[in-house]
Image (cartoon, rainbow, N blue to C red; front, side, top):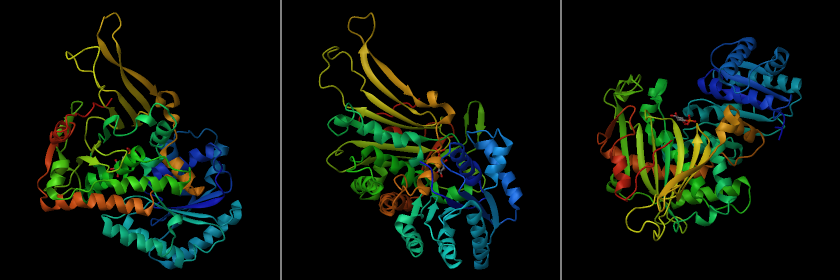
Length: 494
Ligand code: BG6
């Protein structure tokens, strides 16, 4: 599907996200013919830059981060012509008027019918004022559509999210707001629905009669890197829990939508969020949620600093860099099935995986009481490996009665290799086409915050009550106990 002609405004054009993700995504879309010649990109940021310097930045970003290489100079020049730059003080209305003139020039040049997409790769505190100034500066009066694309975090808690949403709603309608959760753009996260709803041997088993528990792991090897300032006020629960983790959970737990329309799908997702059992007291939070912070440790022979030694982190910080939780979804399908979710920085591997553990067979005719069978597992690997893995039990060849677990594996990333599209390609393409399926709707955001706020409030009462784990390890031991109490354990990630 080719996107309709539009101007893409990248606010925060000189920032990291734009450089690493957005420009490479635009180049991939162009290379694949999903963007025709009737598009333009206007980079907006404070620092002065000529159009030519900006195009050189784009070239470097694509060379470093894009899955397509620039091979042909003529083709590159043709692509780069679509990029212009506007230095802007985002609080100065006059600047927006100049931006409008520049926009009209590029619209005329590339025959663009007034469609405008504003991508705010900025600190969230600025979303409200930029939206307001876009309107005041006349940027929203062109003939075509206007869309706002914003990055997370959407607020710091429910209250601040509501305030932000009210601000945005003064300028944009809900259907014009595209809230990015880049996990929803990942190929394998989108594949969860297909695996579930297109396979006769999964869907009938996808419930509390057959599933013992579900484990979702988002582990990272990196520490906080240069983002200590942001992260120390956020922590793992807000940075990954409120959004990516709960979004993945909804994809696994939701009912099949009645139609494949964005609103029908998002209706089903928000129902899952509404069914999450809230922790009713700080004690319940303590029993069901583990938080941890990494201390000095080591990985592959390299010594790693502790979180409190990281740049821009308070030396006595109690911010969690890890959390694990037992979450219950109180509906007919899932009553009684624990969802264990965990995420952390400075863990041993970078991976995102979902493990569905099926219930044990009622009787074990082969081995009697002597041995226990391993449960069947379905593992969905999201990132960086993409694929599906099923663990079943089969006879050990040559033996009379020995059973061994064996794996049936489909490795998507082995086949498609580095050419699997990046999340941001999909999301920019969808937003430009007006498809909001893989963006979070306001009620999803609000319901997720309401759930997370209770955890944060309980933690806030005893801030120093946080476990530690050495960098490079699998997190605090309490996370293992969380499952052990229920007779389960975390399945090792591959
Ligand atoms: C971001 C978080 O949303 O997701 C980061 O703010 C995290 O802290 C990142 O590192 C992980 O994304 P991915 O795609 O690398 O798994």
